[in-house]
Length: 275
Image (tube, rainbow, N blue to C red):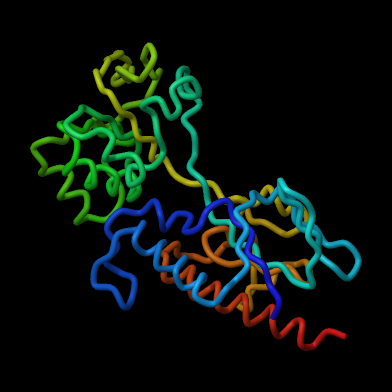
C-alpha cells in the first residue's frame, strides 16, 4: 500500500504517560521511550510521515479528502487515529498562565518543577499517575479532587494517600489560577470557603476529549467518540477509525495498537475488493 501518516506529533497520549508496565514485550518502559520506539520502527521502513495538523476528513465521490494546515490530500481510504486531548478547567487565569506554570502533561513538564510546590487537579487515573510522577520530583504536591474520594486504581490511590509529600483536598473546586508573570498560586473552594494554595506549578488532569471534530460526517456516540464495528469500519465507506478516538470500551496503549492493526488490515481489504 502507498500510504501517508499525518500527525501533529508522534506518540500522542503514549508520549504523555509515565511508567508503563502493561505493554507486552516490555516489563517496564516510560511513555516517551515507548513513543520513541514507535518512531524508530516507522523510520526503519521509510514510511512517509508528515507532522501536520489535520483540519478535516470528508468523503467526496469515490475518494476521501484530508485537509491539513499545509494543504489537501486525496486517498482511497483513511484511518482516523487522532486519540484524545485534555479537558480544560474553564476558570479565570487558565488561558493567561498556560505554559507559564500551568500545564496538561506531568510527564512532559514535571522535571521543570523540581523541588517546587505544585498542584494536580483531578481524581482519576490520569491525576494519580501525575501525582506519582511528581512525588519523585516536586517538594510537595497538592491534589485537588472534585468528589468525596479519589477514583482510579486502588494501588495508585494507596500510594498517593500514604505519601508524606502529598496533600489530598476532596470536595474541592478550582476558582482561579493566580500569578503575575508566572503561576504563584491557585484558589480553591471547599465547604463554601475559599483557600489559596501557594504553588509554582499546576497540572490539569480532569479527563480527556476525543479529537473527532475533524470528521463531521461519521457517526459518534454521546461521548463524541467515533462509532465503529469489529472491523473498525465507520458508517462512511472507506473511513476507518482506531484507538481512543473510537467507542472501544477500554483505553489502553496495547489495545489501541491492536485496533490500529485491525483498521489497517480492513483498509487493505477494502482497497483490494474495490474496482
